[in-house]
Image (cartoon, rainbow, N blue to C red):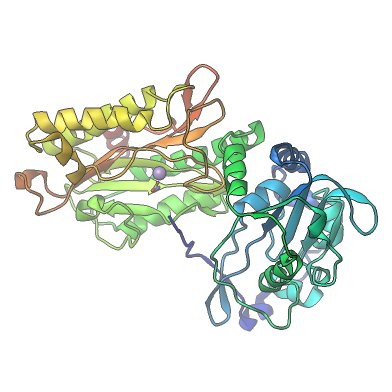
Length: 471
Ligand code: GLY
Ligand code: MN
């Protein structure tokens, strides 16, 4: 699924006048790095991931990764930059227009023997004045500990003889690329020059296996990643809880979104990991509803499917609750079916079982209960009301990469069944406009699982109690 983050960077000259001068009350020690985030993934993490990839590469081969570019929103405004997740995972570099080579074996690369090579954006005071500091080559060597670094405008002329390698691994992409004709190190140029360097007759280029290798690595989270996922999930649960406490009939979906995203930002999440899905009443039945413009009515159920992104890692937690704090009889019946299905799904998340075991368990419950309620006549008709799978991996992408084989320690996945009964469905109208989804984030442990998002109410009694307490 392609997601576009609708936040953007503003580059307007009128902002220049409002930039404050140096703050005299800060001394030079206070102007040090610990004014910024101190819990980013350390260089040792990224080095370990490069080493892990290298161990999967065959002899005499190289894996090549290209950083994302900045995408233009319109005229002087760009979309918020989002790094290509493999590039971030392997380097920690969070700027556009870079290219990374990970060689299986040491190579003689210009000025010594290395098994890595990276080209990054150069420092540039005039661009940095507008768009913020860059790491540059020295920063990449010093802070990210990537010792063999050059500027991206040196790539075109860099003598890189790939022809002596047995295999080149690359993940193809179909990103639209803008060519900045004044920048010979932009993504467009990097790809163009890479192609020229790879156009050596007979070069064995593999465009399949690297994606698989990266999926296999990224589906097993390292301890440092689990720390960041816990943080993202904790922030997301706090947002769910605050919304349950504050929401009122007569407000709007966008007001609810504002409460959620206030909690995200104020607790340090950089962005939502995907556009917040906040759908009330009829919109509770739209799976990826993101307009969030409707007024909240008495008796509306609201589906809140949200995830804070913290240092690249995204949570994904869904709760459904009545705007007025009290479930109707029909809402209660559907809610409890989804909850029963979700609990069955979570219980199936044990190491060694298939990735889709949760889906199978949850679907079984939903079919049984929909038949009992006479909402469906045949088993296969459950798809009318439950039309998605229960699970995806979670990590640097909200729908993270993985191999979808058997579950193993370190996997993090969602369990999110739902039932959606839009108006006009072939059933008693008393069920119409009830949409329920319940989603938790589950870490597979050595012997079982841990629900990372159990910090926010889920049962009807817990939700009604929390929402009643607010007055
Ligand atoms: N959070 C939305 C989804 O998983 O599709
Ligand atoms: Mn999800």
